[in-house]
Length: 134
Image (cartoon, rainbow, N blue to C red):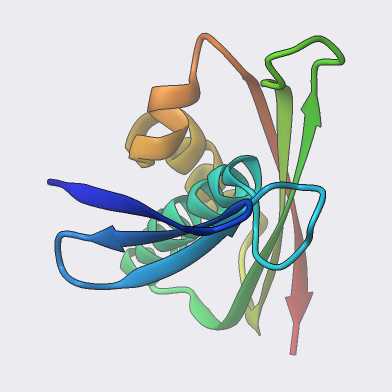
């Protein structure tokens, strides 16, 4: 897997993945695009959501929507790095069983999500969930 990051102007960069997909990155100050730390939160949220949905579907849970709100706490010192990240899953569906949702969230954040596993040991990752039964 490879990627390329090219400086565009000022504090704006264009990241291109090996598959050709692109994302703009900016410093936190100019707010033209997400900063690199924000993309870590997005990557963790999307990676863990894939696992949660997969596990719930294999458990024959009828999921109609899944959103994860990801919040990170960065250390005050430079360089800015996350000390804690929390994932709050909002799982919507029909007759979603609590034990399946709990297992899916736990397995994702501790066993399957590659982004979480890379951060593990350096960042305290916590997660919880809310089930909305339709």
